[in-house]
Image 1 (tube, rainbow, N blue to C red):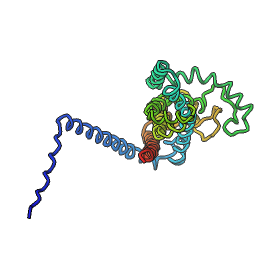
Image 2 (image 1 turned 45 degrees about the vertical axis):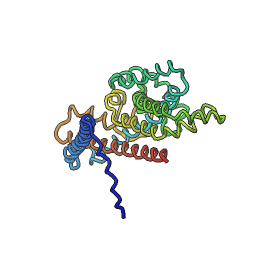
Image 3 (image 1 turned 135 degrees about the horizontal axis):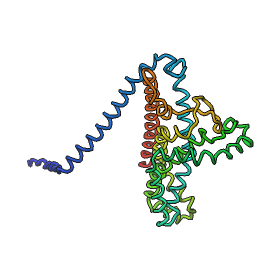
Image 4 (image 1 turned 30 degrees about the vertical axis):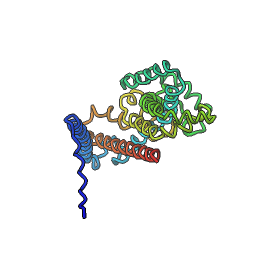
Amino acid sequence: MTVTEAAPKPPAPVRRTGDVVFSGLARAAGITILVALAGVAVFLTIEGFPAVTAPASAMGGKSGIVLYVWPLLFGTLLAALLAMIIATPLAIGVALVISHFAPRKLSRTLGYLIDLLAAVPSVVYGLWGINFLAPRMVGLYEWLEENLGFLPFFTGPASSTGRTILTASLVLAVMALPIITAITREIFAQTPVLHQEAALALGATRWEMIRMTVFPYGRSGMVSATMLGLGRALGETMAVAMVLSATGVISFNLISSTNPSTIAANIALQFGEASGLKVNVLIFSGLVLFVVTFIVNFLGRAIAGRGYKGESR
């Protein structure tokens, strides 16, 4: 009778000093971000809670905090949604041109120019919007009122200055364009070459190849890029504050001088002169913007994660 010997245990993996240091730094960075995020949430909650019982004098005559925040939240969501409707298809088209259509030298130059847009300060976009874009939009707004005035979006009267929610949305779209374009073009460029060549070998046109291989592969990346651009649009302050002629109303009229304001722009314009409970009211509106941004990013991450799972199958 022979006794079988136990198989020797594999040696424990050797952990290099660099791996240990890098792992510790990465873990510390992640924890620091979570702590900072929690700190911001706690601060906004504590400082914004007194606004729940604040008098109407601290809320611009509004009888409740909901009536004060809701028009600002409406304007924030409306401007960001319009910006994404304009920027997303344009950014995806530019990304496709850079990654699949333009010659290499031209695509590299276009990529640099698009990336350069992300480095332009918000104030510069605001100056461009108020001094260049807004006056040139007046004629278009008058045409929209005359020809499409039966729609609630263009009922008018058209603004004589061009400082409308639609102009502010155009500025936000230009600001979000480089973020969406940069991410989507990198995703498109990583599409497996074999998949693209197989589609072309089977007789697909360039557009059919992109529709059947590039878009399915980059679906989750496009969603993530759009959500990042939406986050930029939701939190933008100075450009909107400079361009938008806000009156604090709720209106779907996009070409009138009577426009809803946004949370970030309202805080920037009002905080310098605020005192007492009015500061708490502004902080509470900041808390609402914080929650909305968190929800948008969470949903975007969930959609992107579902796309990654589908690709792995």
